[in-house]
Figure: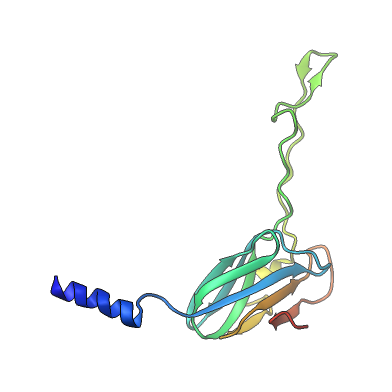
Length: 155
């Protein structure tokens, strides 16, 4: 018991658990709009780290070890279709007295090019420690090249 108390006290004084940098930023599309969701993934010699993209395009990744990281961005999809007002029953057909089949929901589509989903093909890298890394990505239906991450929002 005495050793347990000593260990807890030592952790309190010097700190225990993971530590590291906090990486933040904003993911935008080439038209300037914020990515509506998804994840930013960092892969490097020090390990892999992941942070969710919020609806305003911002992301935060905590406890990232210092080092060089390849970046992948995944799950940036168009808005999922909402249920129609009939609750999925379709529309009522007055002539037949029955409900028509509801229209099939479209599968969500990626808003960004597929190359961004793999850290070896994305062309995006960051070096930690750092602060804020903004990522500007090409739309799947657009053309051009992605911009390198900018630290602290500078272009």
